[in-house]
Length: 381
Length: 93
Ligand SMILES: Cc1cc2nc3c(=O)[nH]c(=O)nc-3n(C[C@H](O)[C@H](O)[C@H](O)COP(=O)(O)OP(=O)(O)OC[C@H]3O[C@@H](n4cnc5c(N)ncnc54)[C@H](O)[C@@H]3O)c2cc1C
Image (tube, rainbow over all chains, first blue to last red; front, side, top):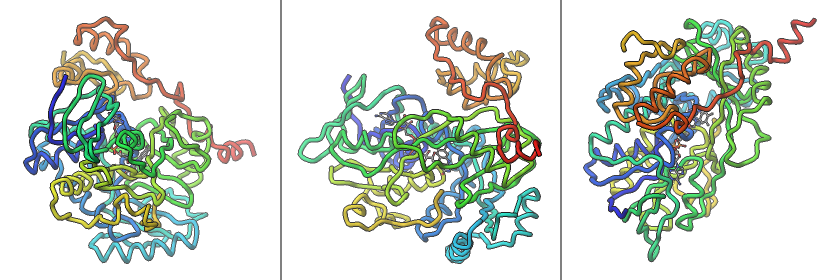
């Protein structure tokens, strides 16, 4: 079957759905979103879904703050028939090294400057927020009460339904197998069942973004890596904020449903598409969480799983145009693409339509790697 | 249908599932993500057979054409303290 579209978006994760919604809201017709599996089958449906504004560069603070403001009004803006379950009880960041603690101080100053209500706090104050926090190995902490958590399936569903109402067409179980380029311009998207003629393609393929880039001959400097995560049985409400430490390598939060979700990185993982669950993760995760939040040790793990981080050399996303005309990138989120999604949607839509960006993201274009201008962010997991 | 509980861990009724199916959802993995069906303490050991049949009937296919949900480790709930080395050593000493 041969079809035509103004814009084809590859990927039905939160990024693809947010981009589709923003384009449709701006009046673009004939938008198609394709996913090789079901909606949220990629990283979006596997993520910790924590959203924070405690970043170390001004641009990231602005992107994160604007995204939080979006989540606050998302049920209304997207006219959702459900509830995205946005809970704002903060992120408690704890430092176990002097260097990290100093960084928190600098970050808080920057965050306050752009209007984020974070603050540097003492360990005593941290214990008031999470009484069972074991502060033995800790030096300091920072807290931002408006950070939080929301349901990734439901947020994506809300974008999906809003986009559909505005006329966007979604085709699931359609794998993009090739993209035709003529004279340096995008011309056609080929899937297992269709050929779609189009001038604009958005690569929002998450962990598979490099493969989709190769289809048009663009070498995207990203790789994918399995990040594991687990969930416990639900219990009564015990913990308000997400507790997170970069140096101790842990994040742990209680969902509104009552279960605790926690994860950590693993430096020994090799790049690839495997998302298996390992015993090693379970073992290290248990050690880390019992050390920092001892009573959590009494909870039963009911499930563990993995998902792909799509990682760039500076752990910052790649946004916007590239050398193939009509081919746009929204990739390389390096583990924080969920919390940026509302702005990803808006900023990419603005770029495609040639509008001025609400937040200047020119530093996140793919050219930065060729120019050697990496955008270094000190506060990533 | 309101009173027919399919997933006992998450209190999901036949009506909840039929509503999802008629809204266009076609896969068990999606039902699971929307409702937490099969993600509670029993990990789908009681409801998966039922849900497979419901989805098969709705889609008008035979039950073996329905993709099962991914079963994930651990097989039964295990306490973090039982896994953690630090906590184990404490218990031994
Ligand atoms: C364990 C874990 C924890 C995380 N925790 C957080 C967190 O707390 N906060 C946060 O902000 N972020 C977190 N992240 C990162 C976050 O999940 C991602 O950055 C975000 O979901 C990316 O969304 P996306 O839509 O860009 O990609 P995805 O959700 O991966 O979607 C890409 C989609 O593209 C489809 N696709 C790929 N190739 C093709 C093709 N050829 N044809 C058709 N379709 C294709 C895939 O099927 C997939 O559905 C976490 C990630 C993991 C794995």
